[in-house]
Image (cartoon, rainbow, N blue to C red; front, side, top):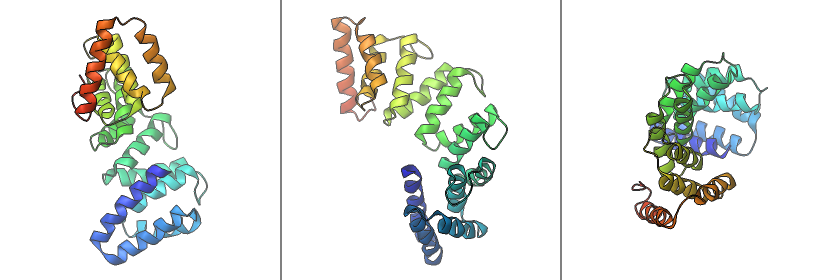
Length: 235
């Protein structure tokens, strides 16, 4: 929910630049959505959608997916997400990919899921980057490609995604798509654990048992360099 409110707010700024009347209509719809008046919000967003408002397509997808002001209907959600996705909305591209991956409202189609996750990932959507990495690692929808999976995990990991950090750590530990390194695996488990994720902390503790003093020292140095560089120089 909070993620979509942020997306809506961003589009409101775009609408302000495009024209006051359009901005006022979007602001009214957004205000209704934020206060939980979903019936009014749905009516207003549908009017905006009829006028070709891309943000309205995206939010209507959310409302149908979550059953906000309308009966939950994944097929309708997919319809609205797809229009928004085709207009370049990364959040809708990622959401549509999820529906294709799980076969919700649309036939399960891993190739379509990978394609839309890729589109969103290239726009900087961290969740899409992790999902795309997972699919590449598993060979779902695309040929298995550990190197590309590591690339996407690393990008999302550097931008703070704890799931990506754990996934990248696992690749380092197994030497898949990257040169095997328990030190770098420990580093990424450690950075994920710093967000409070207990699973990452457990993996860090497990791996620590097989690191010697020199390796632990290297891991600490890498961690400091990573933090000092704003996560740009972690490896």
